[in-house]
Length: 260
Ligand SMILES: Nc1ncnc2c1ncn2[C@@H]1O[C@H](COP(=O)(O)OP(=O)(O)OP(=O)(O)O)[C@@H](O)[C@H]1O
Ligand SMILES: [Mg+2]
Image (cartoon, rainbow, N blue to C red; front, side, top):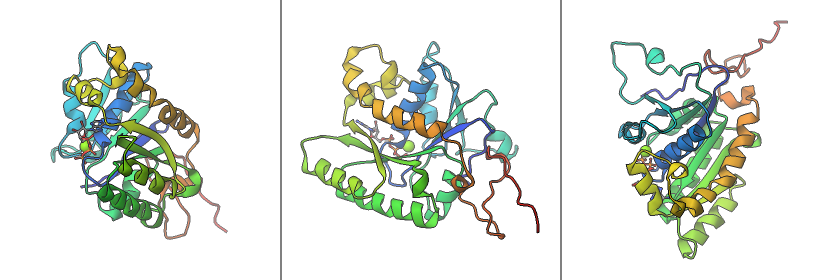
């Protein structure tokens, strides 16, 4: 499956990424989409996950909730071109990319190219911490996502704060020199709101408040990244000339170097 994400110039792309299954990519993608849509923004979710979790969430979303455009990138038809099927409407400002489990390391560059923010949910377990350390290595060494641009943010997900597993996870995350942008609790609120096609930010009850407040640092971090203009380094592609240049549709206008 090809994982490149097309888009127009003014689009802000947020990629939810972690090849480890079940760490919360779709949960975070849908909650973020719901939050942004509720604020009055024009939002789309592009779902690369063959399980189609985000698309299912959109299907049960109530008709009177803030609209979110869905693009199912996992079941492209052969009768139409890929770029047509993955087109993001011009009106959409925020594109949330829900990526699949088991993304091979060589596809990470394609998936993260042109992203304003890359959010990585990690669960508090030894297996997940080990998988996350491999992912970080692949992102930095194979995909060449620049650490300097600071576009990678980790979210500790499904935590129970008074546990050894939580303390181990936080020790590991702090050792990475990559921002830990949020800590989300293991909470049934995520399960109940997902069943209704809503984010926890859109649920009508005050029982959600404590979980919703945990998103504040994540949103603050995102706002900063989304306003930081993309540079050639955010496109992860080296051409034969050694010059990094985005492909058409990546939303970055390349300036060609004058030939000497
Ligand atoms: N903070 C949370 N609290 C409670 N349950 C959660 C939380 N985050 C995710 N879950 C639950 O964990 C399960 C896996 O989450 P999710 O589907 O979002 O993971 P994923 O990374 O998208 O999985 P996959 O790799 O299979 O696509 C779901 O049942 C979801 O409801
Ligand atoms: Mg998923």
